[in-house]
Image (tube, rainbow, N blue to C red; front, side, top):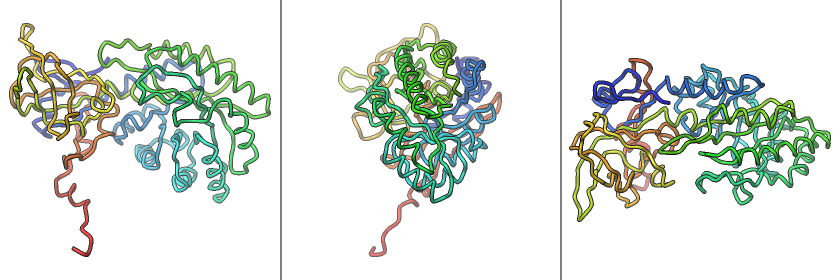
Length: 419
């Protein structure tokens, strides 16, 4: 469920019409619904009320500080993969004791910053990282609380670019080598073992891969405890999918029931890192029609957003529902068209031969389910300005990231002295 719907033939975010926002900020722009963010967080967190669980929103899905503040005020923590994301979470008021630092390439300076902030946990992904973290922590006279991310070699059966739990993926440590890594960690003076971490991918639509991964985690907890390690936390990642089109992913409650049944007997605190599940359907990208172009037998709907604004269709062949902001009549004629952007790439295409009602120059369209991995992956390719972000709450809206000026964008470049 989300809070984007037609009222009086115009698409609204909660109680604000999208055309009103467009008139104020111009297009293209991202628009997020506070009510949807809040609802999705509550639905997920309430599913785990019967156990000790911390929900750490995956900041990589949507890192806007106002979005993080919205979730942090509900009790969310933050799963971060860079110093920049940690800084964003802290600026949003999220306690360091609810921040988890994940990622395969943490630098020593990032480690030092996170240690100095007193974050809750490092998810360590390799032997060299473990050694480096120990050296940094020892130099600071701090013990780094860690979980070691285990790669369970489980296929999440999702897009190959967002599967993370197979042996050939770059993430985590092979589960067969885990006992040796924990044995090493126990000898390091700057390391404090807290638990196990695992994450097998994003946009999973079936619970069975989770079950397989959690069975391996169960076996490993028992083996590590037999080896004398205190394992009190399980960071089980995120990855539960959302409906973009006709998908029917398991509900958070079904996921919670399965997870609790698989782990309750271990007596561990649980940590989860949902991102897309909370933010995905809480946002839309709004664009204007520039031209309708005929070329041979095809019709092209050219809009003012492009692959640099929303890269998912180009990068992942991802589907986004595209709807007119002005509600078409029930008997409106539709025709197949390619919906494309202005970027000088053949791959700058949002949808091929998608049936759409007849639109005209200046009409507004909305790309649904764009609240996750949209604005965070945007770029200035073709020297296009970054897209602004807007947050709606009830009948109010606010720009939470402005569109930069051309002077601001070009001012980042500096000519060397020899010119």
